[in-house]
Amino acid sequence: MIRVGIVGFGKIARDQHVPAIAGSEKFVLAATASRNAHADGIPAYPDIDTMLAKEPTLDAVALCQPPQVRHGAARAALAAGKHVFLEKPPGATLSEVVDLARTADAAGVTLFASWHSRYAAGVETARQWIAGKELRRIDISWKEDVRHWHPGQAWIWQPGGLGVFDPGINALSILTQLLADPVRLEQASLEVPANRKAPIAARLAMRSASGAPIDAVFDWRQTGPQTWDIEVETDAGLLVLSHGGNTLTIDGVAQPLPAEAEYPELYARFAELIAAGKSDVDVAPFRLVADAFLTGETSVTDAFED
Amino acid sequence: MIRVGIVGFGKIARDQHVPAIAGSEKFVLAATASRNAHADGIPAYPDIDTMLAKEPTLDAVALCQPPQVRHGAARAALAAGKHVFLEKPPGATLSEVVDLARTADAAGVTLFASWHSRYAAGVETARQWIAGKELRRIDISWKEDVRHWHPGQAWIWQPGGLGVFDPGINALSILTQLLADPVRLEQASLEVPANRKAPIAARLAMRSASGAPIDAVFDWRQTGPQTWDIEVETDAGLLVLSHGGNTLTIDGVAQPLPAEAEYPELYARFAELIAAGKSDVDVAPFRLVADAFLTGETSVTDAFED
Image (cartoon, rainbow over all chains, first blue to last red; front, top):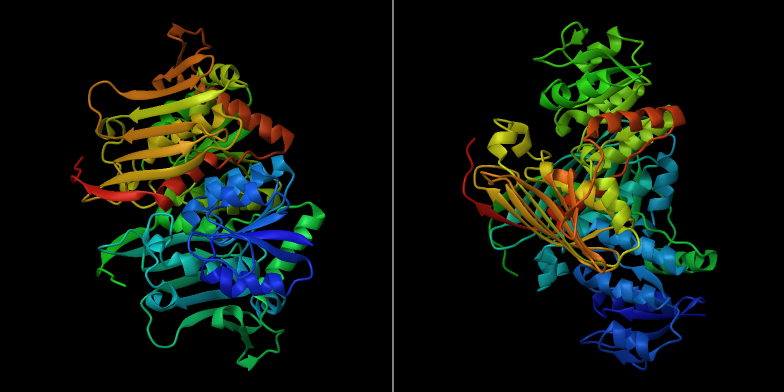
């Protein structure tokens, strides 16, 4: 069994990591490190340094805290010889992820930059259907209510918190999984609330390696029904992934899919990587986000209050 | 002889590329493509597509136009089987550079993302002196007068034009050449004129893989003497690279250096890569710039007029 400690014991840790670990035959939850929360019956520490010092038999850590503080924790865990599972996004900057990949290699341990949406129920079926077909266009619509999903989360509005790209990067992680060749950003526009540092909405104009246009709209101001849709038009018909990749239709016909199992699949992948002595650090989704900030036109929009 | 065509026949092409090609035993200037300028006695075309169509025996192209339009030209040249020399920065986004690298590989031709400042006279001597020493800190000061160096260049203020990072990326290209291990960005602040889209000044807080602080100040509002300095403090003394890497002192003592030959060295490297059937696409300097836009705090400063 791989003894894993979770750092940052917030909603994603409790809702997703704990059940996935409990359901795995490969992992056991051995400790948590968090300022405010703990799991009943599991050793709890206030921070990762204390956890690493007091739990020398830990094999791995899963880092679920905000991305702005993830690099320091990952460096400490790698230095202690632990395998590291990074929640998405893998950091606050691309260069710190490059640093972690090099550090993991030097330490001979596994680094896994996870993208949970790539394991949504419909993604693998969609990827196989798209392979070899001629792309005509892709349209991504990722619109949700930030007040519902991120109530009072100040970090998400700070530099490095990504704003609406925090959910939007999930769409980009699916997109870059669906297409075998690299996607490039051509243009972007970002809307930043007058009282915040990160965008509340964005539009991205991208292009596939074969030249097909890929348009994405991310918006955090959607009330009522939420939208997480990807439409892929090909020479052989229209594929639609909805509900964040968990529903799939082809030319309007619903496709049979396996049950949702994003985090169990992520932990199965983490176990495989550890067994094989490998790392998996694909920064493609994060690079598209960096490109949007790099080349995007920013405009100021209405102030946002939680 | 490698028959090379230059695309974008502006100041950098005339001042640097033409003499470097003329002085090389490996290259001959066979054509230019530019809307407004040409070289006496050399076939001139209005754009790259015409040049590629009319000059089928070209072996290579050097792309010197603004980065926002470089990707399309590079794609066209690679598709025609030409080796490609990219001026810095290698594009407007990281993802389009990844696309070019893949396209060059598929076409079996050389892609060279050039960083001319890495060939400044003092850089290799400095790199060798630093190797194996313990870094204490690095301070970069890159301050120049944009009115003098980029008079009326509108593209440089547009998204993708990088603003003050256009010179600043030269400092970052030297920095990432001096250090064997990756540099990571921790924080950045950017000052954007009220009437422009790109920063006129920036501060970057970076860190070496070994943990040494690296601070950089870029400013385009410097009149009088211009500053392009890198100070490297180590356990064995203080190294100072000045004049954009062309002057070197160690503990105050001027070091003997070879003559300045940035572009001749770049073309020698391009010839080597072509002969070896290899590409050289190091995005490290550009990634640090993308990270600065991604995670930096932007503030609005005084309007800027040329």
